[in-house]
Amino acid sequence: MHTPSSAGPAGAEPPLNLLDLELLHNFTTATYTTLSSDCTIRELWKTDIIRHAARHDYVMRSILAVSALHLSQYRPEKKNDYIAHAYLQHQAATHTAVSLMKQMDGTEKCEALWIFSILTMYFALGCPRTSNTSLLIGESAFPDWIFLLSGVRKLLYRLQSSSYSGMLSPILALGAKRWEISHDPKFTESKVLDSLGDLMSSTVPDESLRGIYSEAICELRGQLNLALSSSFQSLDIMDAFVWQFTVAETFMPLLQVPTQEAVAIFAYFCVVLNKLEGNMWLRGWSSFLMSRAWEILDANHRGWIRWPIEEIGWIAPSGHGN
Image (cartoon, rainbow, N blue to C red; front, side, top):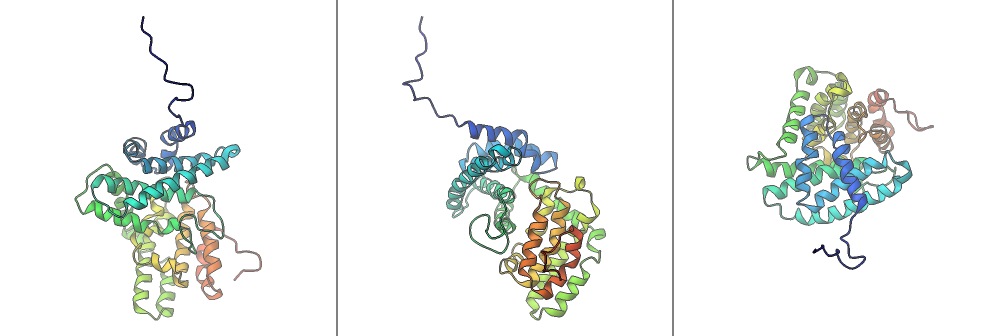
């Protein structure tokens, strides 16, 4: 009777990376639930996006990196190992993605790059925070995930220019829905940011800058009041990105400079993040970013952000009260 031959000489078995298998399992059983509170979006991350990642190794590496950071929060005995592996996978994914971004042709390539960009934001949110280093490439006063939406926005425009109706449509639809909700008159007509707007009008001499700041405040008003009037259960992690996405090409470059006025406006956005801290990816970010804002602002502009400081319960460093 014929019996199958062995796989080959000893040591010639195909490699099996148990860590990556563990991370893929974790993503499809647990991590995906943290990426949205919307059931349709969760299912998309769990199924269609995983199938898509099987055709694009850099997307799969990004998934593994995010899963590793997720697990690092719950396995303290292996935390450093998970974080180190997350960095390795993310660096490899970034190397491939950056080269592909030079020529974004074809819907599937744009979809893959868009997924990579979103996962990169989660990766940056989940990385260990330090007070003096940037989380990704380059250095800035604020962590780089805050500015990544500019690239996401460009990819979105490319998809929408072709009447896109592909697998990412539910995510795009949810983003549009969250924007529409925040622009309901009951949120946009609040006077919460009126005093900040008055300060900008009376102290910023440049008309074009005043216009940018005014637009940023106007867009933030609805988002802020939505967060203040809602329970965590009615908010989605996407609410942390709607405002930044809207002002990505106008206001965000000023935050990268950063100007005192831009930092003051951004401090008010920390209230939105604070209301979303039930999500593990956003936990602790409102206080961390408020501390960065405080460090950057001079004594005069620190006085502009008393309300958001009080709203999130942040305490200035000893000896630096205003």
